[in-house]
Length: 134
Image (cartoon, rainbow, N blue to C red; front, side, top):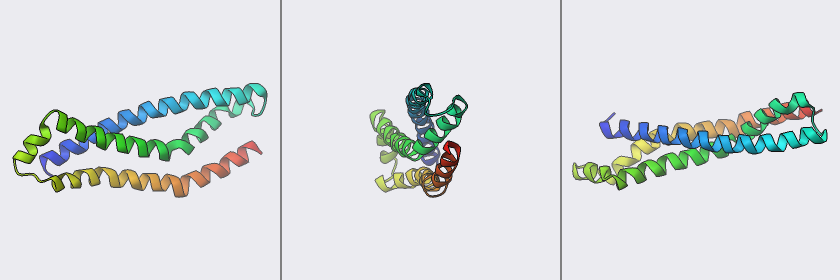
């Protein structure tokens, strides 16, 4: 793997991780408010607050991963252009299509993880949530 590919993947991973952490924090705070409201009214028991928080975060994970993937790629490539790193790489003979490989090496595993969440883990979690409510 070439230098620019390693640097690009590492930068996208760090940026996407920060984005995922920030977005997850927002979702968790929103879920806590909603679930505590349901527990205060008596719709769910107080022992079910933490599992319902997990189910809610689990349900939002494909959206959060998609947004963090987009933000990681976009903000990294934007920073490369802004700091003139892209100009240096393009001036050294790297083509625009040369940036496709590191982006795909980063994006494909995340897309597979999103697919795993969407097709396997979310239906399983929905069954567990229904069993927990009933």
